[in-house]
Length: 174
Ligand SMILES: [Zn+2]
Image 1 (cartoon, rainbow, N blue to C red):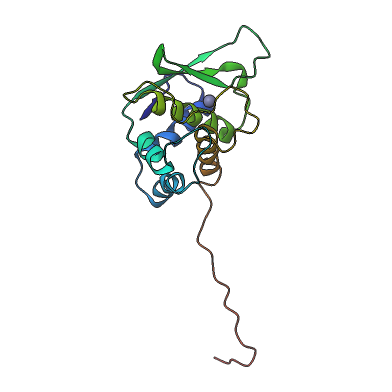
Image 2 (image 1 turned 180 degrees about the vertical axis):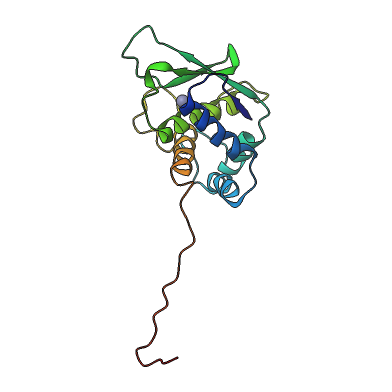
């Protein structure tokens, strides 16, 4: 999958760049990301294995373009949506861009999971989350994987090399 954004919003561009790296990248962090999905426990609202879901998302060939929209209802809670009518478009709520990068990565990736699910041959939802109420849906594929992507964004610059502390014996003399 490739996510495309033709706008000038720096925040979105950074999020999109990061997501495309998760899809295309081959360093250990990218490998870990897909491996984490593969080894996740069975997702709620789905009979498909986590391994199959991981592969289906990673191998999905759809190119998705982000379009910003302003909901007519100012207090709309939706962060984004996708629809079968426009399978290559991810609609991102313009009023919700004040959020952190992590949160926006989470939202975009959540929608990518829906696109990979719906965009396969059967045009059916096989790893969704039922209704749009988010409560209690943490363990569904879209929410769980979206959150994981956000976490990877947040920790991308962490130095995961632990420096081992060497304690010298008091009586050691060099
Ligand atoms: Zn969703």
